[in-house]
Image (cartoon, rainbow, N blue to C red):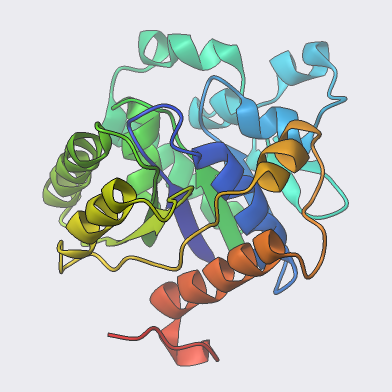
Length: 257
């Protein structure tokens, strides 16, 4: 089972959109679980638009993090993949458990319960440096960092990289990371910003997700991308690139150095 987090401390970077459509692509390659660890619940809304809020209050990612329920009791099935939904109650997570280390280990135990069930797990993380982010990083083999053209892009990336480094240091782990550029246009300003990212040699920059109103529209309508469209192929390639990073021995796709 390969666990991939989609993370960026800056809001509006396309985390949930990337996680949703990447999960669709990975699900074509093996059974996939999506974990929404962001209290905003955008990924939960996409995956489970008709979810009853009363049932959500009883079983969600927070009840798993606190050890109140088993992960298998909280997972919902969809046509494409399974979902561990989020809840606004995550805002109170540190009130109930302020120890990030115990949360990391509790979630690891929860993942171990389903290790033989899923081939891929995608975690959507919060847009800030919270315990949920640390928990996701600790339990992931790969952190994908979606980046959009903004004056804050480099600063936000550096803040996230600091968080990843801190987690690596505390737990003596080394994580793989990669940039996923999204919505970059042909303008000189956009190209120069993208080149700055590519100059961070230790972190590969994967194929671009095109600037597309279709992606935005389909996401807002909670619909998958049309098969064989440019956007569909972009996320399909992202799935191959991600697998090449987390499981190169079994990947038919090789990243260029």
